[in-house]
Image 1: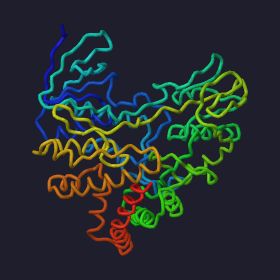
Image 2: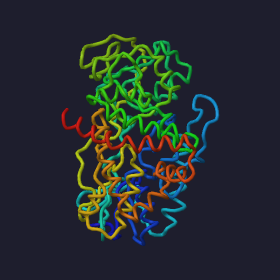
Image 3: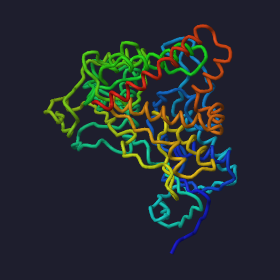
Image 4: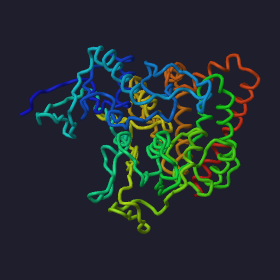
Length: 466
C-alpha cells in the first residue's frame, strides 16, 4: 500500500542547481505542474554538503538559473583578482537558491515539494524519515536531474582505509582543524584539492609544511581569458581565436595543449610535469603562484591506505610524522558516465550540451522540451557533450558543442532565447558589443570567426588519428 499517490505533468528528481535550472525555464514557458523531490531536506544539491571556503571557479554571471542573477556582475578593480568578475562563495550561493525556491519555485503554486525522499525506478519515492512510500505518476516525463550530480569528499569519504589514530579529515572539517607542527598533506589534484591548498596558505600555514599528493598533473584554464564583460571583450575573444589557431596548427592533442599554454590560454602548476588530466578547473595567475609555493609534491599514484607513520601508494610506501594532518579531497567530482539520449519517451535525462556548463545545459534542454518537436528532433538539438577528464575530451567536447550550436542557431525560437539568455553570457555579450564595436573589438571578433573553420577541422582530424 502507498501512503499517497501524486500525479503531475513532470516528476523532477533532484533539487540541485541542475534541477532548479530546468524548473526555472519550464515555469516560464509552460503551464505544466511538477513534483520535485530530493534526498536532502532543502534545495541546492551538493552545495548543502560543500566545504565552507568553496568558491565558484567560474564567474557568478554564468551560474544559477536563467531568470535570476547571481551577484551584481561586479569586476574587481584592484588586487589579485583585478579585471576578473565576481565569483560567489558558499553562503551567497545557498542564499540565492533559498530565495529562488521560496520566491519563484514554491510561489508558482505549480510545484509539489517532497524533501527527504529517495526516488526508485518503479516510480515510487521513499521517505527517508519514516520509510513511507509515495506513488508518483508523470503525465509527461520523469526528469533525472541527478545523472551528472557532483560528488563531494564529505559524502563520498576518502575512498581508502584510514587506520585508527591517523588524523584524516574532509575539506568540510579543515577550517576547524589545527594543522600542528607536523604539517598537512592534501590528497588529490582536482579543484577541491587546490582550494584546500589555497585555504591552508591563506590561514598562514607555511607552504613548506604542506605536502600535496597529485596522482595526475592537471591542465588549468586561465581565468583571464574567461571574462564575459565588455572591458575584457577583446582579450576574451582573442583567447577564443588563439585556441582555434592552436588547433589548426597542432600536430597532436598534446601539441595542441602546448600551443594553448604558449598562448596563455591554459596553465599548469608544475612546469616540469606533463599534465594528463583536464577537468575544466579554472585558476588565475595569482592562484597558480600560490599553488606553486608547495614544493613537496608526491607522485606515486593514488593513496591505497593511511597508517600511523606511513602512507601506502600504488607505487610504494612513504613514511610520515605520526601526527601529520591528511585532507582527503579525492571524490570523483562529476562522475564520468556513458551518455544516453536526453529525450526518451517518458524519461528525460539532463546532461551537458555545452562544455563544463551544467546549469546552462539544463536551461537549454528545458527550452527545447517546450518546443513542438518529437524526441528524435530534440535529441538532434541536444547531443550530450562528453564529460572532460583528459585533454582529448576537450577537443571532443568542442566538436559536439559546435554542432549543437549550429542546430540551435538554425531554429528561430532557440536563436531568440539564446540571444536573451542570462546563462549564455558570451552570445549576449558578443551581440551587444558588435552593434558598435571598437576597432580592437571588431578585429578580435573577425580573428575568431576566421580561425574557426580550420580549427574545428583539425580537431576532428586529431581525434580520428589518435
